[in-house]
Length: 445
Image (cartoon, rainbow, N blue to C red; front, side, top):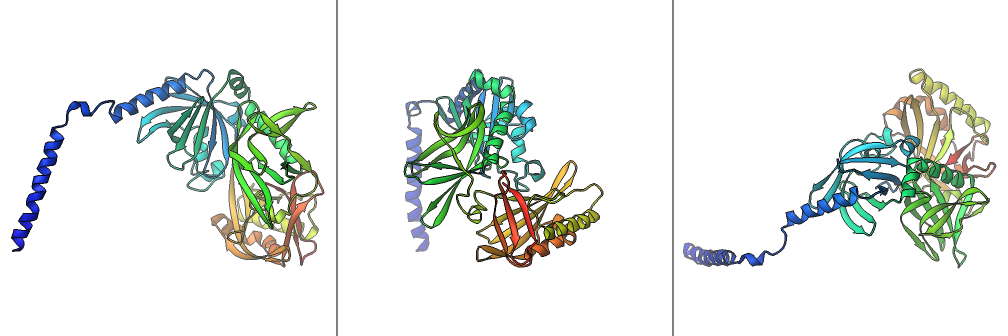
């Protein structure tokens, strides 16, 4: 009985399959009009090749990575599959053209591959000594991209591994000349001077709402802070130096009466000045000598690091910290090879994890190494009480005995952190509540 039922089910299936096959074989050639997908892909690659190589003055390029930072490039593609480039992240890359091979590849989408190691690859290098990024991942950047869209003189691409965003914009003759004379370095220097010598910068809309502007030149980010009720909000965007005078944002900042997509370098009384802008319509960046918001609220968002010199004292340090600093230097030098230096410790906070990380930089020419020490914390009356949790890596394990005087100072009572307003530079201090003379001062990044 079961066998009969099985045959009855199977027969309609066979008949249906036969009908489907007959239906397929009866289709006419006219049902397949137009190009096949592979032909369309080949045609698209040819179109992109022409577009890339026939831009007479090359391309302004803005790369926004998974680490938030933005990076500016200039590319010039030739028909021999070579691309020349400048990049905005160090002096050499801004004034010495590098060359890479490139190719267009048919994948799921038409793709642009940069084949040989270049400035572009440095951002994705898994060796964090190259770019200061995450070991194994670098700055979460890419060197293989898929084409997404062409809008007028702009090509939009997406990284195939880390989904970084790459914008290519046709350069003008004047912009090409600017790149070739090292303008990326000049633009970076002027922006650094403007943002680091002006204490507290802000934008103000028509409703008198204040938005602080804090640019981190080394990490290529800009943070906008503003208050919403009793809370602090932060918008953190990347930026890329571009063309003759632009700092292009990773996305427009739109809040209240503020709508900007870039900063622009201009001149006032013969001195370089940076203004906020939407296209070419500019908006004044205002300044004040007084903090707009408490330092602790901005630490970890607008400001990432307090950079405290260790090899030398810093104006504003007190005696107990300097005694511990020199004792730590002597002990750490004894643990490592002759000639090793310890330029600075970098103090960062992760508020979601309630964690402070102290990174002692170790310098063995030509390399720098990180030695990270972890501290959990609790908040106590506008201060934080640190508890030492231990070394976070092999380097910190090695130098931990030498670093102990500083660890002991940090954990003896609560620590207050705030702006130091005694110099024109943007600095912060750490002051022990229990050790009157344990105080250090460092630049803010």
